[in-house]
Image (cartoon, rainbow, N blue to C red; front, side, top):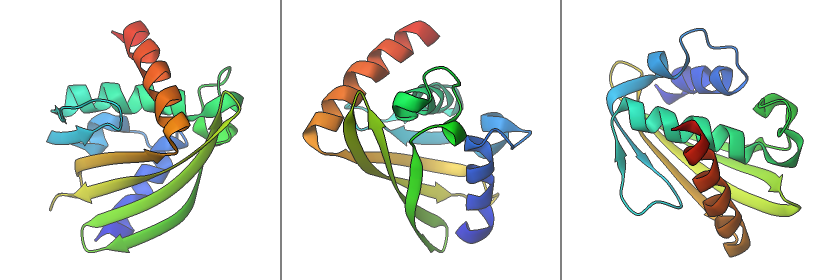
Length: 140
């Protein structure tokens, strides 16, 4: 199942998925951020955080284009099983190497019902925290 649906996610981050986040996210999606203690529940909050993350995780090369496709962000490994996908990624932000995983769960309708982001090393967590706060402040 995940093999079919993860293609939609890859298309979305390239800006090639016509329905965007509204089409891909379940109404009751839960987003787990590496820098926010509480889970973010619901499509509107998840969408806000994922958009901010896209602008932040694009790293040094995406500041002007806001396009992950034209950035240092790239998925390096993919593990798919049943309705789950684990996508390892890397990028560079403010000259610091960032490595992490997106853990994505799809519901029976093929929409994302859970999205969890985990990152390392500690310097990356600190940079992401600061930049996500700034990005969310400008988006609200």
